[in-house]
Length: 194
Image (cartoon, rainbow, N blue to C red):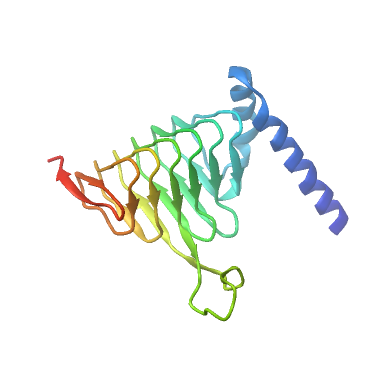
């Protein structure tokens, strides 16, 4: 039985690897057909080539969701990822909901090279390598109409409230109030949109 499970898991990984590499619109259509039943819940979505997804069963997608080339979507190891309608994540970005939870509202966009990670390494004891100390678990909440610009990092236990913009290269370590334009490391208020 254990051998059968290992073979099944290996075959599934091969199946996903082949599908993720298929180019053109045909590849997107085949991924839609093959991936749709794997998600916990999903509307209409588009997944480009080279997108890595782990923990399909812990991911809920709204309608009109797009993951562009070479993105990473993780919700394994007890994680949870919920994405609303009209969402786009550009190339080479990561949603790391493993060991935690990420919730994204409607009409949001994440630009290239961004990292959102709902957990972090524990490193309290300097006598033990940090890799052996486990993780702290958290949540990232992104409300409706939020734009995260290129090269941003959003850390665990943060909420970005509605209609906010995170400027390029920013690191969000604290909650963001609605209608805010944030920038810097760590991100600070630049101006209010309303």
